[in-house]
Length: 333
Image (cartoon, rainbow, N blue to C red):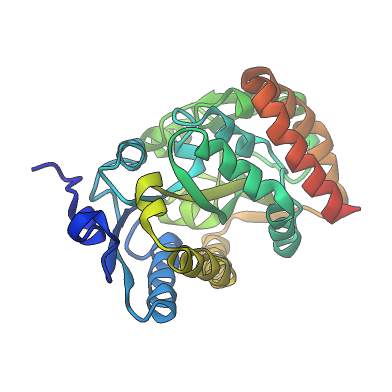
């Protein structure tokens, strides 16, 4: 039997296809059982259970138990899995507009302002780009921000020039580094530690907990706290499964999702702070960008990345970027 068995549908449908009293939804993700995403889903399930009197529950399958992210996303699309919570960075092949998240400094540095941008129409527009591709996106949530590390100084914009940085396979990321004189080299994540250790690249970008957990700090000397790259996740449902839920059940899920976002941000922030303390203890030189420095980096990197995104995303991408810009301007002006 396929690992994407129709277990949830059996309980979703009662006699004659009517909605059963109790609904158990199977949701998979690629992150660890201790990840922020796991915490988010556990709290989501708890709150939804409270609001529905136990009528709706989630079976959560972490750490790629049901396959890789692309496999799970397609399983949700075709109805073999009820839902998935996944990193947008892994979904570019499914939804090309996901690469808007590769634009550096997309969000303001302040987490509350960043959430306000999501809530001002951008998250809805971003979800709509998934809805057009055969899934139902119920929400976009933050899962950390990327920072810069290198074995060479990176405390100022000028110090980046001439360096080589590893990036994910993304034309938007590659183009974003060119204005600051950095050669961006796409390298598989599994090969990154060795690439840093042997000098194939000078530096990389990742969230603090990834830098710590993957021990990249062992082969780097400098860390710049830039918060330049948005690590975003979406929760996707199979449309037929979502439509079979009652209005009250759908509202219980979406309202609970909104309520657990602050808890999830706090959990991710705590993990980042713990990782940063350990990285400092390891002896790396740590620099935090000032607001003025962050503005200089954004002015240099953002336009090239934006243009690369629009070039590959066409009119649909332009509409999404316009929604982003409107949300950003609403929050920042």
